[in-house]
Image 1 (cartoon, rainbow, N blue to C red):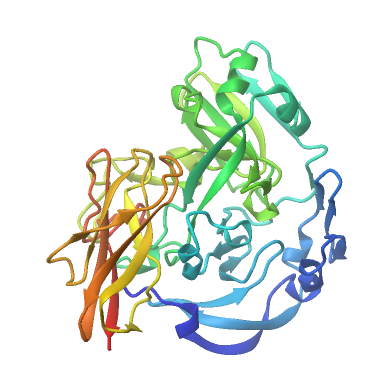
Image 2 (image 1 turned 90 degrees about the horizontal axis):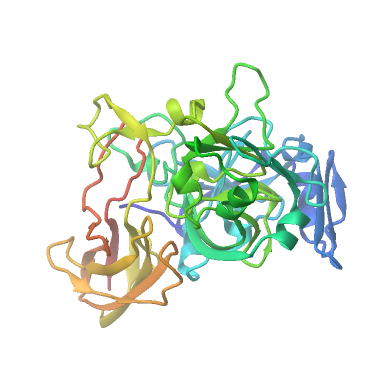
Amino acid sequence: MGRTSLAFQEMRTQTTDVGFYGEMAFCQNSRHYSCVSGGFTLAKDSSNRRRVLAGAAALFAAGSSRAQMVALPFGNGERPLKTYPEKRPMLVLTERPPQLETPFEVFDHGAFTSNDAFFVRYHLAGTPPRGLDAATHRVKVLGAVNTPLDLSLEDLRRDFPVVELAAVNECSGNGRGFSSPRVAGGQLGEGMMGNALWRGVSVRALLQRAGVMASAHAVEFNGADRPQIATVADFVKGLGIDHARNGEVMLAYEMNGAPLPLLNGYPLRLIVPGYYGTYWVKHLTDLTVLEQESQSYWMQKAYRIPDNDCACVPAASAAGATRPIGKLNVRSFITNFTDGQTAQASPKVLVRGIAFDGGAGIEAVELSSDGGRTWKPTALGKDHGQFSFREWSAHLPLDPGEHLLVARARNKAGDLQPQAANWNPSAYMRNASDVVRVVAA
């Protein structure tokens, strides 16, 4: 409850340090993308769609511009709205590394999130990595395989069947800023998610080509980003061998019909449909087949949840036994109203939104106008696949006065979105029913 709109929460315009923006703004208006600024080069050859990105120093170069400030409706919620390469203005949580949240209004524009509005989440300082070039990029398959592979993107395109899949990528801590009691970590609104049509090759096809040994237990995935100091753990994620070769996990080189944006994993990223974004490794370079489970810090220590059915504990208590985070919770949002918005009183007020889950598929979305005391069914929009956003809509009678609109989704496995948020020490997997206060007049 309390989600805000940029249109209603503009606070002021001020001059701020923006990093690359002052020098890079002209590049964004160039159809040829042939711009050099502060060590950053972005070139595009329209004849073969080849893109060369040599260095990301401009992301952190000194500069200034006028940045709109907005306030998310929780403590420490003030955010600058800034433009990064290949991105429209985004809410900035941090600049080093880039953590950019999608303005929530974007999700009212359809089931798919445009590339220039797709959220950005990195873990290591110095990201995105420098020198990325689709023409020279390599991906290796190593470890417990009969035939190690060293492949170019051209090899992937030419030698492996193309797969295409719509899937939601959601940050594990999406909505953390609303947690009560508050917890440590990035204080995120609800825009750290997005849905795209991904195109590439299946991990199963690569593992079949390499010949996985019978002793294989898991696969680790690593990207081109590296820690800046030796005491920081490299960002490496792992999947069980059966999961990695289930035919759904894929390596994507295109997103919504275009090459991946730099900040979303160019030129190749891992797609793990139905699982939280921590597994979706960007700038992918290595697949290593292991004979034991991954010992990566990011599997054994980080991104872990209480090991129980609700992944929750009593508020402000320790987690106890934990396990790695996994599938997305069932979740829905109201997208065409913001908290506190005024609407015209009417017997038929259109309310619409989106819903998604970890792959069972959305069975139904229900809507309430009285804070959850009574519920009305909604009409589901086009089904783009079990891992995609599913649009929904309904008409409600709204008499003059204040109404608490509440949306809740149910998936085909029978999981129902709860009205109250479960709590855990990292505020992961938040999926409370979406509540929006509307005043009809």
